[in-house]
View 1 (spheres, helix red, strand yellow):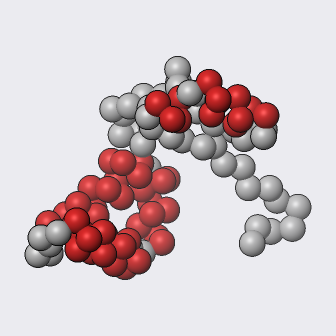
View 2: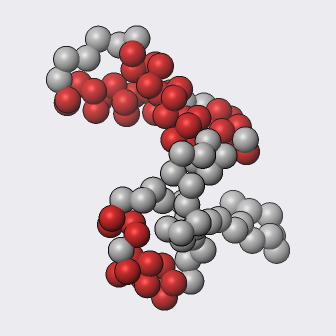
Length: 97
């Protein structure tokens, strides 16, 4: 919950998948007054622009490499398990960076 009178402002940051950059999706986001980074503004290889991709995913990848996983279903379970173990402070630090 946010302090009374305070509004939490977020900006949606997607990757350049065609479903995210389609005219239909962009128009929907605009119609819903959702603040988002436009496909033209997106920097696909910038660590500053993608803290989840370059921060959290790197942490999860290192953790998953330590586990013995043979099947896709096992990978999915392991990923969910590691995500649940991830401390919120780690996520905040990645987003803040």
